[in-house]
Image 1 (cartoon, rainbow over the protein chains, first blue to last red):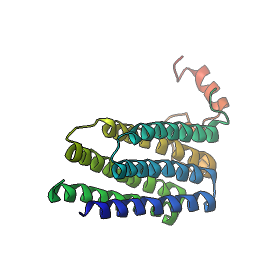
Image 2 (image 1 turned 90 degrees about the vertical axis):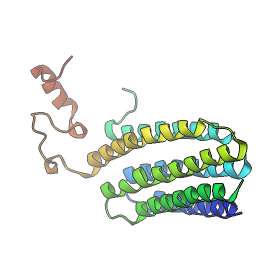
Image 3 (image 1 turned 180 degrees about the vertical axis):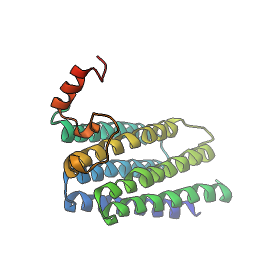
Length: 90
Length: 131
């Protein structure tokens, strides 16, 4: 009864959060801020995927979430390391 | 599902949604880069954790089976969030803070984000670091 409304609320919150992250990627100054906003976008997108899995009632989105979490972590670390050292694999 | 089960899942979902929203709002609102690091790394991780706990409880109640996928995602996110925060903080230090402004380290080597190859070579010839 109340579960669809709670799902709608949570999905709306995370969609607004994604839009704010996009704003922050475009408008913020400095590369580390943009890296941080991209990392937050990945985390919010994982939350939206899990919510979509609850709505659909399938468990297939968890594998997608794990893959996206790994790719997001690796890319964030690679960006930050490139900022620090000038190359990624020394 | 019965009503009390739906109430538990809905409470976790609402708390998670509020946390995710506040974390991303803090990314815009907070004044300087080092404080902006707080919003996503703690609050948004907590929001995702709430969604994953809600999903776990939902599949226990709806399908009567326990799934470990959510626990894996939670473990991975909670392990990697401090690492990414540490890397981004180091990149911030490297780009926006001057070497003379940071507090002293208490040894003759500088902080890791500021150590140049020259410093490292000097430390290696002195023998202060191994190998």
